[in-house]
Structures are given as C-alpha cells and as structure tokens.
Image (cartoon, rainbow, N blue to C red):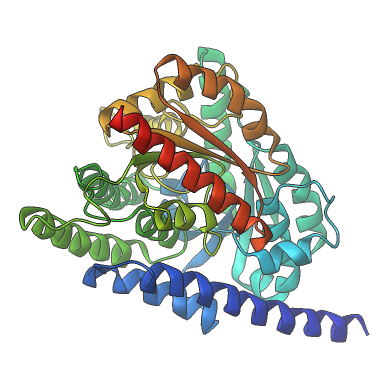
Length: 422
C-alpha cells in the first residue's frame, strides 16, 4: 500500500512540476521582447529536465550538495560531479509540507519533498549528500535524508570568518572532506587532478565574470531573469558545455551592445536583488520586477553572482598550497548571513550598488528563512544611510501572493521614477 501511495504521489507531483516549469519558461521566453539566440541552450536544458523529465546523462559518480559552500574543485578532483539539490518547485514544497514544520523555509521543504518523492532515483545515482552547517534547517533535515537511505555528510563551517582560528578550523574541515571524498569515489585526489579541476572551474568563472560586466552596461543588454536561469543551469549542467554556451552568449551580448541593442526600456530603473536565492522554477520575484518595468542589473544571492565570482589563489601547484587556497576561496569572500559579524555583506552590497549604478534594492526573504528575515533591518539601515531605497519582500513558493507582490513592486518602481524626476 505504501509503495502504491508513493507512486501515485510521484506521478501527481511530477505532473504539477511539469506544469509549473512550463508556465515559468513560457513567461521567461514569451513575455519579453528581444530574445537572445544563445539562450536556447539554457532554455532547452530546463525544458528537458523539468518538462520532459529526461534524466541527465552523467558518466561519473555524483555528489549531491545542498549549498554553494561545498568545495566543488575537490569533488571534480575525486573523479565525481557535484549536483546541487536545492529545489525551487512549489510542487515539491507541497510534498515536503507533509513531514516538515509548517513554518519551515520553502527551499528546505521543496528539497526534502524532491528527495522524498523520487528518493529511489536519487539514492541510486547519488554517492553522497553533502550538507554544510550554514543553515540549521538543512542540517537537521540531514537526519531525515539519512533515514531515506542516503549517505549524508555534514561539512562543518565555522560561525565566523574573521579570525585565524576560524580559518584553521575550516581548512581542517575541508581536508577531512577531501579524505571522505576519496573513500566515497574510490579515486585519489592528486595534484594533477586538483589543478585541472581548478582550471576548469576558473574557465567557467572567467565567462561568468564577463557576463556580469556585460550585464552592468547601461542600458543593460540582458534581463536579470535570464541571468538567474543561466546560473541555475550551472547547478546540474555539464560544466564544459555550460561554459561554452555562456561564452557564445557573451559574444552575442557584446555584438548587441556594439549595435546599440539592449533589453527592456532604456530608462528602466536599475535594481539589485538580494536575500533568499531564486531557484527555478520559482523565479517569481525576478519576473514580477522585470514585468513591471524594472531591470535587475546586479544581485547578491547564492544562486547567482556569489556562486562563481571568486577563484582560488595559490603560489605553487601542489596539494599543500591548492587545498588551503580552495578552502579560502569558499570562506573569505563569502557573504552568507550565517556568519557573525556580517559587516562584509553590507560592504559588498554597497560596493555592488555603486559599481552597477543601481537605483534601488529588492530584498527577498522566504517565509521561515530566519537568517535573511533577521538581517533585513540592518541591511535596510545601511542602504538608507547611503540614500538607496529598499523594498523588503517576504514570500514563499506559492503563486497566491503574485497580485499583492505585483502591486508593491509597481509602486516601488514608480517611486524610483518619481525620485529621478525630482
């Protein structure tokens, strides 16, 4: 009986997921003018995975990760491939609500619902699920994931990044993780493999930084909703294919910029999005912002610009230098609100606001995500002191608040236009 119930749940959930993804892609591709030819790789990737439910063809062992703080270089060096498990699907959120507290973060509920609904599929394909201690809800959810038969590894992260003790603690944690990876994949992490992994990921980072520079042009040549889709594709797309596709897109954007072509209206308010990460198919807020006439020219979220911005820096290409450099790359520049104190995030937000000449900030916090909910007041004060208006939006994966959010966003954008006129 339980097997039959789970199979019915699986079929119903994936039907709703396909409908949800189809609606999101329809908005992304059809509701905005001046489509980019080079976006087709990214659009088709999501169509195959979410609508057609076609499994990804990966010929290496897979390591599931639930946060961007997991050192991907070491996973590749161990002969495996990282697959980010964070879900943005309301269909999975509804399933996760059956066994998660009602006030849980929708991202956690959706991820748990995804693994529960299709746990046989994931359990067969994932060698391990890595959960960093950046989020209490993720860490506690790890116990339930383990009860479903997954091999769960908790990657310990210090509560601060400001001290040498914290840095030493994190480097020790990363070295321990490297040993566990070797045992899990059966492949030794060598100097050559680590250097090749760094080079491969640095190629992706170079193209992504190029995209960010183009994105910051005035007027912007690409919508923010497309940038979020591109970075979401990085979660599971084959890394070299993703990098090549992004290179082609950057070439097209440069040509459009030289030809004087741009996305949206020339005078569209330039906005920065920060807070809880937009993850497909839940691109509700970015779509509402740009449908209302705003343009997201920058962001500070872990599902986009924070994901691929920084690179490891080391003196000698040996493991004694490269592994600590990889560890530093995931700790020092990180602006996650899990760290205290978190003055570095305020500094980074102001830096981005000036660099990209933004007119305002939209701060998204998922209901139940205590870290972002608690920090929004101090961020608002910091921005206010610099004369930068901020709209705080508390939402979840449900489409029920779209009308209310649309009204608030339109009013915020109109207030920026009025401020410009004055």
